[in-house]
Image: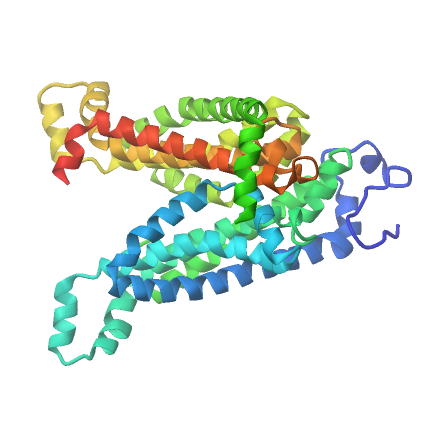
Length: 235
Length: 215
């Protein structure tokens, strides 16, 4: 069976009996469409999430550096974060479209803004939780301010920062599912295709399962990294 | 900026539409939150009281975050078909993790000395839970409910994809309502979520007036 590019439409005419009857899970459909639908969608999904998390992490880190030194900018960020979480992601995508068009940029701006707040909160709280005694001790033993930050404060804040990264990664992978509202990318795409095609169950279960599996695997990887980077913390 | 001015015009021009959609939105989110509370709250409190099920409480919140709302609603569609219940079921699954996890940790981390003192005075397990642990852990329990309600109200929007009602119907239908309608509806969603969060903050303050003066 040869299907053109774009959303895969289950061929009710010539598919297996499972596909024709829209059975609970048709393994033959998955085998046939892994290459043309599922695998590309999976890679796009990873790309969407990775870009958002990378940029989000960089911006959040810079913001946290500033917020750590100047506490004044903290309350406004808190208010913005509360407000942003009440905006449905679906609406945020559409509000951005007039400014940034139907593009990857629109999706990434929305995804980055959701990660920013989680990451920023955790970084700032991790840095602030470093005991003053420890910092005094470092300064007392002749560390410069920069050395104190990179060798004492940052490592001690690492568990909190990585916990934030876990939450941000898992939620970004999850929110990226609605990217197809703007651009036809990611694992949300086969899910939409299946919803519009008489709720084709196999595709929904397979693509949906893949999103969840991806999120859990990413979570697991960060946990492993966390254990190796911060062996003094018991998870 | 013009978009937002237009959005307020849309609100002024279509109060009835927005009001009825907001009503549907509340009905959907309220039903989901109510069911999630009945299921998750007693379980979380009881497990916390027994100091058991740490693994369950911790993994429920991790797995919960990994479940995309769209995927849940699509799963719900295959099982329940189009209607009120598939969306409600999906939202219930989303609301359970924060409620369960916070309830568990609120009770689990209560001061052991206070609990021992209560037991020593002859309170039964249920009395300890209801009169000592729950009042002490209440702020944290309510914080979980607050997170869950913001989550559910914002996510109920996606229900429109699966034939559900509510403000999402306007948000996913830019073709008919225009961008101003989309922004107006999403402002209503934000207002609803803020109102729910505000009410829960007030409940917390009313229920434990000493909390703020202590901290």
